[in-house]
Image (tube, rainbow, N blue to C red; front, side, top):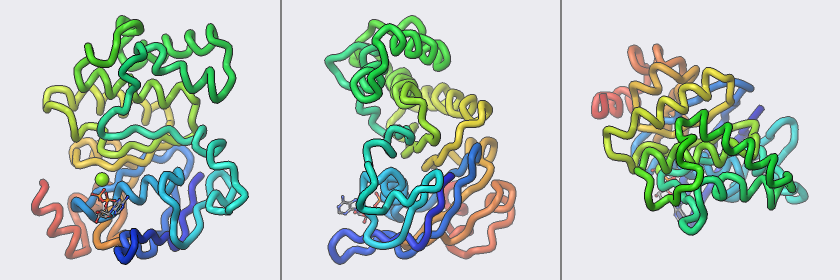
Amino acid sequence: MLNIKNLHKSFGQNEVLKGIDANIKQGEVVVVIGPSGSGKSTFLRCLNLLETPTQGTITFEGQNITDKNVDINKIREKMGMVFQNFNLFPHKTVLENITISPIQVKKEKPDVAKQTALELLEKVGLADKANAYPASLSGGQKQRVAIARALAMKPDVMLFDEPTSALDPEMVGEVLGVMQSLAQDGMTMVIVTHEMGFAREVADRVIFMADGYIQEEGTPEQIFTAPTNERTQDFLGKVL
Ligand code: ADP
Ligand code: MG
């Protein structure tokens, strides 16, 4: 589904990604871990071109999306993204937050978009919050709305950038639970997280990034119980 070849990204003199090669298969759940500042967010943002790579190619569903002639907005519609800080529209209800893109971007009929939104709210356990405003929701609820909003565009892949990092500890589980059920439904997902228990349980593959490279990747079993790379060992020694 996604093929990343020799991906480089610099901010001025600061080369953050120094040549990343990776493949994400349909239905795969890939968790990206690594120290703060190692380029995990930059990597994720390059995948849907929120950042423009300085070198390398990204092929998505057979199309080279780093090509200048590509319609970035069409590509982004197929890639749902969930951020650390929810980014909900504060002056719109939960339902409006979820239906706005399907209606405005995908030209769905409002009643169709609404029906989909209600089903998605059911799925994330917030059927009773359709008419609430974001300010009245807890962090965990906001993040579940953000996930529903991304799903409303019927993406082929979901990208998550530390979706639980801004949450109080008691709300982490409800968001991870929604993500786990998405994984079970077969959604293709790339997830940056520090939740090692989740990674262990849900990931098909774990990628460890540091110093601008993928240092090591493997099954959760391999990475968490028998990492071979010294940087991985050092990192896991600190976080586990
Ligand atoms: P991580 O998500 O692993 O913590 P990031 O991808 O956010 O790492 O950041 C990696 C490096 O890139 C950091 O040194 C950060 O300061 C830099 N960086 C990220 N985004 C920008 C930007 N928009 N402009 C300049 N530097 C950036
Ligand atoms: Mg980050």
